Length: 266
Length: 357
Ligand SMILES: Nc1ncnc2c1ncn2[C@@H]1O[C@H](COP(=O)(O)OP(=O)(O)OP(=O)(O)O)[C@@H](O)[C@H]1O
Ligand SMILES: [Mg+2]
Image 1 (cartoon, rainbow over the protein chains, first blue to last red):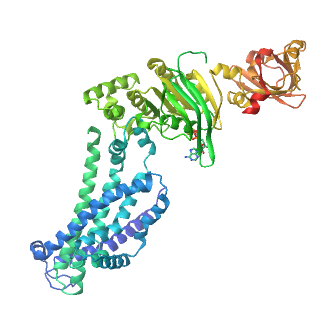
Image 2 (cartoon, chains in turn purple, brown; image 1 turned 135 degrees about the horizontal axis):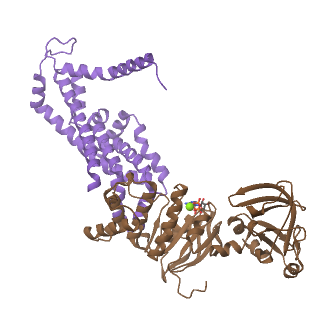
Image 3 (cartoon, rainbow over the protein chains, first blue to last red; image 1 turned 90 degrees about the vertical axis):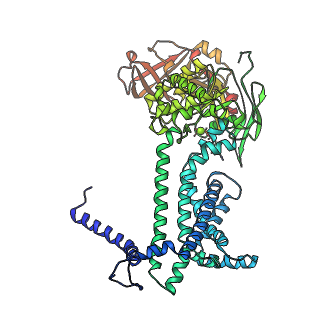
């Protein structure tokens, strides 16, 4: 079917409008981060990159970065492991309470994160645990691990159970089947789950707000500074946060692509 | 079976129940060493269930299986010297052709160089070019994948090779080619093959014996010619191709004119007379035969060198007749037709046999 010139033009205009709507806010933050003025105002009169220098040398920012990275890093690794085994239970193996498990595991995703955060904070208090970045890891995992499980499950559902049976039939024990067939086939799913987990943890605000205690992650700090004590350091750090996510996503994609290219030889 | 050598596989009273449904009802079977046994039967008759139990992917509810005198139904799948070629082939998509073939050898700890040598040898055996060794599975055609799956199974070097409808996804011509290759491979390797198929034709081309399965039981296990000529039940007779049935009650069969000799032979017997369309011959008005039939032709179909007629007898029963082209009925549809056959061409299924099925 051929579309008329007019409808093509309309479609393009529509696409640009959507992209503009989605990305202009980000551009304005980007512009704010290189404005020389102390207050957020448009149009920007003078540009300066000094705030980036400040951000990169600031101890506060370094601490924030370290905490955010620690939390997101641990959450990523834990989500990949939990997601892998969770998906096996979710999608591969038939066991008695599988249906119940499939429903239970989805439950945290349906809770508003603020409610979940509050509930966890109360729970930590009840247990006498002092909230810190470590409790934040638990809080993030409650919400993110189920998502990781779902991401890996999609992959697990799509592969033929006969592959594992064939391996077993040809003499592979449980561990060999896992190593030779299950893990390599689920790996793309686990990688995507890891990326998702990092991004969700890295950018998470509501759960961190309730669960970090005296520690602070980057999104928390951004919010606090917006409420009181704004400086152009805020959009600068915001842009650095986005840049980190972007680098990670593209790095992940390139890595996955490279692995796929190299595989036939291994 | 008159063969005195002990069977390679012995199945004894094998039963499988799923919740309240019984898929296998106390199956018994002996398979000879080096035999090519085909298992045929309609969908849902329990063929896959049986084979999955034999290779160890499912557990029987009751009964036992022996391989060369060792009880194997209690042995886990990965410790059994059997191997199965799946309908989906189950080739590992993340491994190359060579790695797929070497898989069972790798598990056994065979050195890489030796593995590769064996894989290349198997590529030759299956008539695949050697440079397929480093090809990816996704780059292979359906028939090539089939051969890779076979090569992998042969690399495992099983005592018995099982197949679950491995050719059903392929087009007709390729299927025919692979049928012959499989038969060839069977002859060259001397291994025992147990082969499930929907297609009777496939079973007839390849197998030494055919086991016909119906609703979780074997109806008949015998060489193809025997099943064809002497089916034990109407089900088997129909399964083997088009056939005419005539009820015989105490020596009399409505619609069938019996000669004196035939009358004497069938006297007092009750059951079902089965007559294949192609064992009938055209009779002239005075022609004689042990069994003869008269009717009006209602339809004709050209089948290459043969012609098939449908005719309606005086009793109202429909009958199928197949003759060579040179014996075509003059007048075609609407003409009167008289056909007959020898008593030896009419197989009697005794009452009891069919009732038990
Ligand atoms: N896991 C199961 N749970 C319940 N019923 C089952 C199960 N597996 C098989 N069955 C039933 O057992 C019967 C035999 O199934 P099976 O797959 O062995 O048939 P089949 O002869 O291989 O058929 P087809 O030619 O269609 O492959 C079927 O009625 C099927 O519904
Ligand atoms: Mg089947």
